[in-house]
Image 1: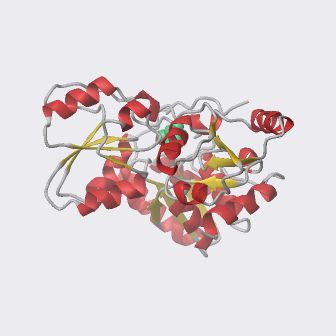
Image 2: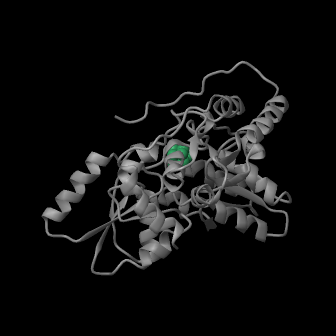
Length: 330
Ligand code: SF4
């Protein structure tokens, strides 16, 4: 069974500045650090001690010396933090914050597919994108992020077949950049799969000098019309490197606009399809409903109550080896 689809419930209003003050005091009292993914709301990124993509945050979680981590992101990220820091208490604001991509590959189905391929006499190496559950990670040989995938795939011997899970779009893109054939799992992210090519092309036409930046989780038709393709950290570094004020059309989760604006305030960032001033088109489908479950109130409450917590599961032992080898020793 997968994580139930998460809806953002309404919370009673509390002043965000008061909440931030309360959270700062609780962090000191509890000896905790807050980690926030670039896809959570900007106010949570502001109170975080560490922000970043999955790779950076996994490494931060392992290096932090404080006894408690609050991981503002989605469930598989909290699991990875716990696996890499077994002695720490890892809290998450909402246990129901899942991930449609991780849900699309369940451990029993992956095991069945691996058995099927091996029964055909094929030697396979299973490479998993970090957006997978710990149970799936425990069945894999390598874990990659959009930041290190190419480098890890390049080092797998050519006589071994690669089974890549769960993102078919990232897998197809990696086949293109590495020149390596892979067996792809048919998974996808509900946010990145939904961008409208038609809206993007119209936005480009109406903003002739704009630059399209896209996450490699987007389908091929979006990547084909993009000027820059990269994960969230690469996007940040790219927009920072462009000095002239520029309009960027951003094809990824819309909360990403916040860290882009912070690192390169000279530019204008428009989410794809987003709200186009030129045409008035609107769409809110590029907000991840799971990431949106993280709120300041829940961050405060989990610090105060010491829960919800990610607890150790038996399969974490196996996942630990592969995560450390893939993310910490490279
Ligand atoms: S944006 Fe997509 S890949 Fe990222 S957490 Fe949400 S559903 Fe998962």
